[in-house]
Length: 363
Image 1 (cartoon, rainbow, N blue to C red):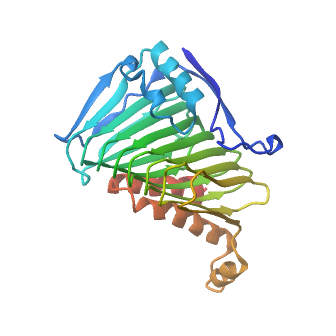
Image 2: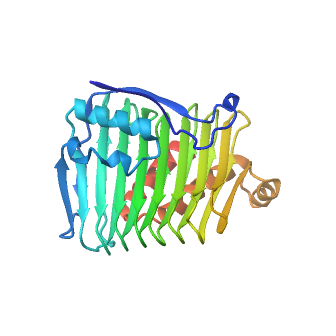
């Protein structure tokens, strides 16, 4: 058994402590590794399971969203439990057939997985991770993903969380984009009681880019804590983040979004937006979009839209025989299904639809 006990999702530019938004705390005991069911491997993508020591220098190159302290402690956990690192080496282009990693967590499991994607020059690849558990199961599941994108490579990544109410966990993503490289991420946070989600993109290459979309629903007394950072040091880089979610019942959600324009990133652009629908006055919602600017010749945009169902929308729906409760369910379904169009897996999309119907629409 090994322990994770550290502050995570550290906000790059600290604000007032009494707001309780600068970071959150992650603590749990880890017992085992994740044994994924993997499909879709092609001739251009090779999977090897390596020892943690093979990646001992990676933390100084690729920091994930939960933070440097977390990465260092997570490495200790991987080493103490002697868990393998899933390494995917991409040398060809086949974005039509995604590599799919699926996992259904068992009762009382406290597991983690470490994944590294090495995208070679001028390649395009797609990876889908979905994880779930039975309705009454309790446990902990954590996944770290690091993407190293070589020049002119494109990596599509999707993560889908459909854990049960008794599960806690995290997804921590880090990427480094070299010249003209791009990472395209879609994340759905639908399950779990207390979930941390973090992503850091190091856009160091000329004309490198990152595109991120997150959709979520947080209900009951659950919590979701999100930290997004785009560090743009290369010239003519671009970052885009769109977050779309629902907070209901007495749930809580924190979203931190930071675009960091580092001196030398001339002609770069960044855009981060969040749209939050609050369905109960008892929810707690904290949103902190920030732009740090060390370079003058850049274009940065950020914003947040937070509110309830507007009276005009409710009036329109009620005039067509749709009551407020049904209108709320329609909005939840629409927000999640809009993200599904970016997931190239019909079977998984159907599974997501069934989960949403059972967890939020017909509850």
